[in-house]
Image 1: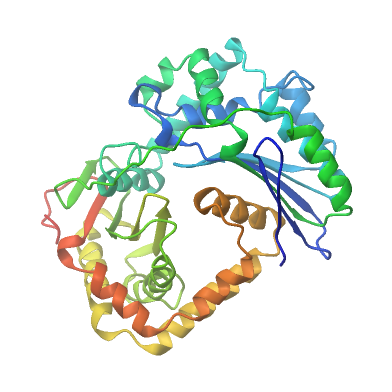
Image 2: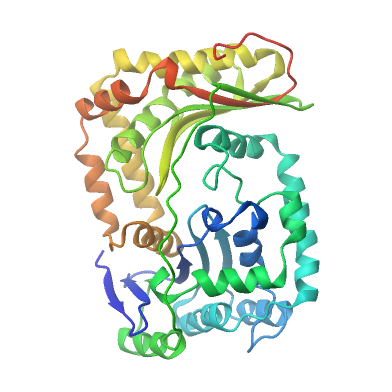
Length: 417
């Protein structure tokens, strides 16, 4: 996979990943701006702004006209907001890539943020907020990240808070866009079948080349976990959902690769330790997983599950036991199986032009480097048991573990205090 890079005169980076045998073309426009750029007063604005991009543009003045323009070419389209980036994307048959480019340029440079639409969408965002509160399996992730990163921009939920969502103004939107949505702070990626790179390049320059301005230096948010190990949100639920884990490393740190392998050994497949111990042997949970999460400014290794309210202590105790046990009895075979799991899943994901575009955009925004996706597989293939042992020794200790729980609180003595 040969990634080609060029930079427009205004500073916008463009990455091309031609895939001659693909049957689709994905285009993603991403900006290094997310919830960490917000103050408490405007918490949730980046996510709110992402919604507003679909409300109409200069060429397609209403949400209906804009969505119909994309539907007429059979596009898949969406957007997402992260803690440190926001991305807008379309995936179409190759002959409609020009439509994707024009839609994204309109969303960036000619979005119509109308006050009346803002008020309507405010209600949508508040209902999305309420939806997460009613889904403890999802909400516990936000609780855990606030717990492990602290009550700051990195720990705060991307969707924001009710009071800030209600108070965000039109001027807040304009100020945020004007400050962060600048060419030097963005990347455009085209991945999939590209019929003519020459024509594509001309189109990109025409649609995106007139943007001007420079975004300021990004804020540095240092994670700082809360003092206590256990945070429990009492809520009437049929299950108790928990996340427990340890702080690890950020996106640019090479340790994230052996930590990813370790997460698969522990809970990344049906043959993993936690799956066998908690689901197969004891029948305590429908789902249990372990994963490594990395943001540019911090990361963690975590175990997550949902269990019967009466079994929460047992499930958490077993999870902690497995985290500590792997420091003593990890095998070479487990490491090799985990590496094959990662390799296989990555290769399968590379069949999706959108997933490739998103991988390239995120990597560029966080590292300022264009990565060959196949090089990622090579990094995993070089990892040894010795590398994983270093990670377990460095990060997996009982005093490092913190946990968050959502469910009825019955005063049970859990392993963490």
